[in-house]
Length: 272
Image (tube, rainbow, N blue to C red; front, side):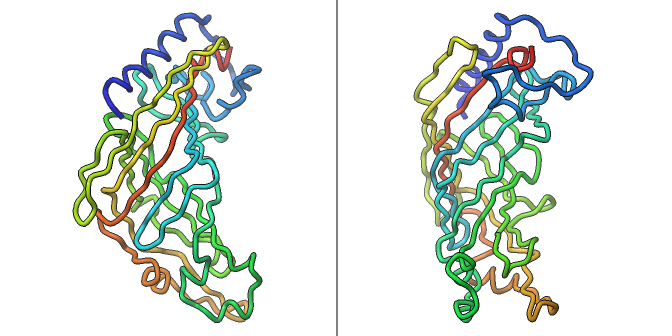
């Protein structure tokens, strides 16, 4: 994120806040005003009085490559929460954060594990593999948009806790609309700043058509992947997942491209 864009966002939130009446402190979490329901993940003044702007970032498409697996983003991934007057200090309530969005992983569970014999026991739907990106730390907004995440790999064969990355060892994305400086063999790639900036009559500001990129991050190995034979014999298959997926994957071998739109509104409009 460029200095110019960051200042533009801060100015937008500040300018809109000045046009609104100050919000009273609430004794409990409030419901967003009509027309602002999309900002339900933004903390109310009662939850976090430091929040002055509510935001909703929508990653509508792109892809996420770790190791030798490249997953297209086909279902929108939404980051919802609030920031302070400096467009920092991201915070979210129980309805916010990085909302779950299941992405289909090409190759399914057989491609992930190499267990070809599963085709004899599972139907087509059960062979599908889904990936959900979850927050694994505190996002921060500055020159780059830092997003610590873990990826939940979902299929009954893998158990309920099969992840790449964790809270203690997250995948640390440093997303930028500028140009990256990755370690080899990756080469620099460039994103794109928001292409339009629109202030709407209800006080919401929309920024559209940005491309955030990062190809400098590392991806750890899988953990918690367990195959249960005969319903009661658990066998770790982390090694299978890692060998089939090229994990752990060092910095310079992974890439994400995220086509992103954003909505902003002053907290005192969302919670009047």
